[in-house]
Image (tube, rainbow, N blue to C red; front, side, top):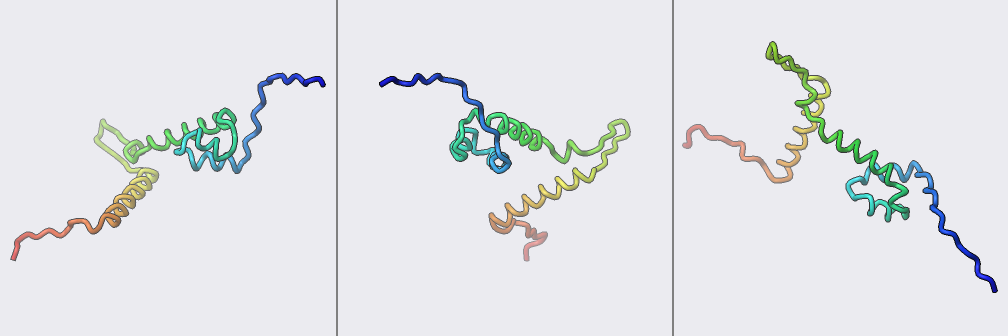
Amino acid sequence: MSEKKTTSRARKPEAITKAEEFYIQHNISKGIDVIASDLERESSDIESVFNNYKKIEEQQSKITADNLMVKNKDYGVVIMTKEAAEIGDVSAKRSTQKEQANGPAKSIHYIKKQ
């Protein structure tokens, strides 16, 4: 009986489906190895998509309301843009949600105790 020789070829990674790309995008915090095992793929198959979404997430996390303000230091003028106001609103909602989760804030102040 003759044995067949198997040659080791570098396999081509299969194309990432839209469903897999969506999963990668929304689970970027899990890490590439966990995502690869969840999708039953090699980490090298999803590496480029993972890195692209990781870069996008890092860029978005650097955006603050302060960065979106229009400033003119010569005249001492700062103008809040629509985008800065929206980020400020989201930030305010987060802080009130934390306060609600931790219980009522100590916001009662007495001027004169009776």
